[in-house]
Image 1 (cartoon, rainbow, N blue to C red):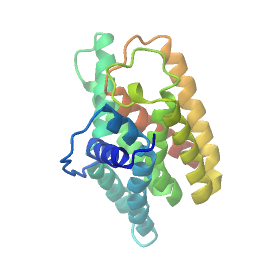
Image 2: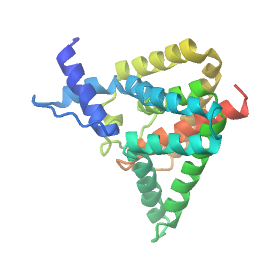
Image 3: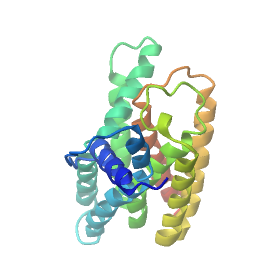
Image 4: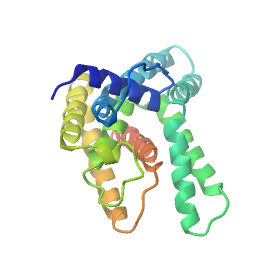
Length: 233
């Protein structure tokens, strides 16, 4: 049933979870509001990417290294570095399974991702920067029906239903066709690559930490930008 009030509240919940936008909710919230908010994630991602697009457009006037660093700073601030923190926590979680007591691998992994962002922000098409966060959130939703392991510790994955997956899939392809049809190749390959990797790891990994969601978002965004650059799209 279409409930505009629930969708609005759910959208605010997603904004509070994944961005620095902190809107006070005076109404009582429930699980259904949260589920309805999941459908807004691709659009929230597009909004985040839109401002990255505007900032990156100045690379035609100023040094690309400077603009790349500004875009990375913007991305970290607007998202509260929430997904990067999840990436760090996920690497730390699985490192402990291999008896690694220090956090060196978490630091190295996070630094590598940031360096890749810094490099790719300077050289990929501007439209790919606009679409990048949308691709990350859409991939997270789509993967909810591929992962077979215990996802009870997660918040988004465990609440995704079939209509969430269909909505994310349709919106992601529609927006890419409208904004830059060439990037359909990047999106398709990203979905396939992430899907294959998750399917393989799903057979070996028993438990998924709550931080796996942010890790999926970051990795899928990097793969999307990397494919775009390597294929010269």
